[in-house]
Length: 404
Image (cartoon, rainbow, N blue to C red; front, side, top):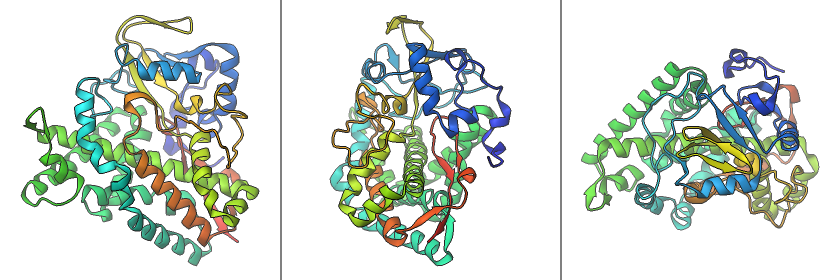
């Protein structure tokens, strides 16, 4: 296994009992969590840990997740996230950190920019960018499918939708890594990333108030909620969420798909021979390698599957675990690229289902199709060199490949 100290594995104590002390920063979890989850399902209805926020529950079934996601009264989204430093106060990022009735107004304000019709207009832009990235890897004969390809695609797309300079992409990527990967283990790093991102977005809002365009920032400036324009602070927090939630999640999904195709020759060759299968394959890889966990805070004592959960407890919403539930998906631990019945929850469930799912799907479909068209034959340089990031968004951070 490569040196992965940059992801914080060396900063956490080893896990001796996953049922009572699970840890999403353990290298075993990051590299291959599926055996852990299967073992937990056979031992307990719900796992627990006191490493974060004095105690966090880990639901283990699709039905548990579905119940929690739809009970917004008991399981609030006004949550500060999991941090090794304890329960730290920080700015809420709407609408994901909002509950009804505020949530609906905020979601409606953003939704028009992410409708299927609106997103489809970005297809030529995403395609051109993927063509450029893939061509560069082919010209070299090798590269990193994560660093040289997957990580660039959503950064460029989100920057364009926001109306900011895509050349700032390297800066965006570092802020996101600091916020999501390093942040839970280092509060100062997390807060600095939040500060830098917020200040950047505040400057963009000021600029757009003087020079309105057809971008998301200009749209939000013109939106009214209950007859009142949104404040700059609210707009900035919405924009920070778009960057944080719209980039790492998508590059993780694209990276996981390319890792799968590098390690499953039959699947890759089927898609090369019949690109019409790619949309179904993308849905299956979204299910099988769902990257995102989110948090809830319990507002009142409750019971889930016989487990007593107390007011103030945290719940780690395990959408990736739900996507591997045998009660919902036949041969759930297998990747079946032509799976027909696939009502996965990779994009979440309930009122907080991902606003950007249409964009993520477009990016992932275009990314996979373009990559395979340019590189029908590619493989890993070394399976042990692949690095998976820990934390709230699990995805491959490095996938060194060689083009055949």
